[in-house]
Length: 392
Image (cartoon, rainbow, N blue to C red; front, side, top):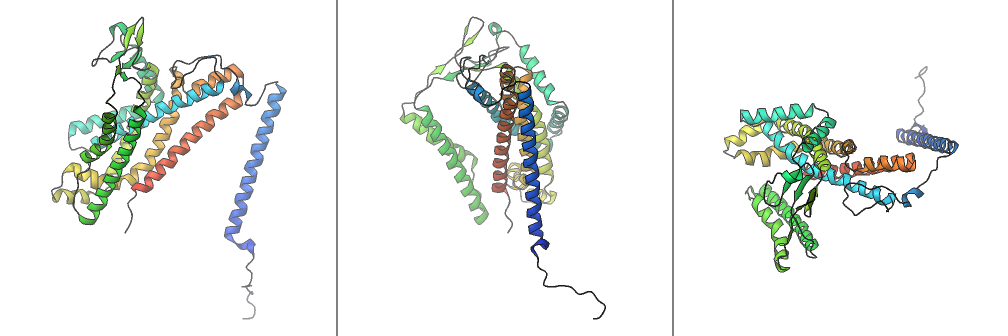
């Protein structure tokens, strides 16, 4: 019609494409970040050169010149900075790995206890969560370190069972002597655990298809332990214990857990488990009460209802925030520097003071924690996809 603006319907220019503009914006943002990084890098190098501070990674091949109180791998002061950084990384992974396992067990138990029908159990769990969650993690670590330091001396050590000793020098436990068969037993255990997982999955699929319940707990334990037991028996059942013995001012032999390691492990575990308990409680309470009432009306046991009805649905709420708690626990392990535990941060700070290579030492610590965090996130995302309930 006359007087109305004409719309050019043939105007399909790529500049009007939302996808194209999105790509352009991302390229510009990436270029800006790259330029900023280049500016910071050149600025740091110029300032370091002006102050006659050496840069580079050659220091990693130099002798460290200092020792550490404990290490998973053998180490002495004549070895390189690269090896002592490796020792620090392994120490960090050591406390983080067992901390995640213990915090998960304790957190899940306390989360389930919080929704228990037993008044006393629920109140005790609530008290634990409220107290531990609202005390800073650094105070947890220092508190447990102080408690361990107040334990008796090695000569008056507490003996909870034969061959084990608890003192202000740590926890001493019996440990088997090394044997060539043990790696094969460990491999058999991994295969057995995999077989137990396959059996559990098969039982779940069969239950969903037929409605017939197959007990999996004890059969899974039997499958996991049967193969390593057979390997151990075929290999001649080698088992010879190395017991700790008091010699001088401390115990020698067996397996020793240092007071610093124990204090750090308990501190970050107790603190993180309180948050995991709240996550588990919220996940359980997110399930509609009608499902629980229907299960109770059918006469199903509470344990069965929790395992097969409540928890599988609650995992979609529990897993994502729990992954964040695992990341926090791993990063909180750096608090070991406060009580003398030789973790990555402790060793990195000492190496920085010894060499003056501040940028390189901090870069190593940042890269290691970034790698660990991304690995934990990837594993938890994969687990979240595996346990996700598929819509029909």
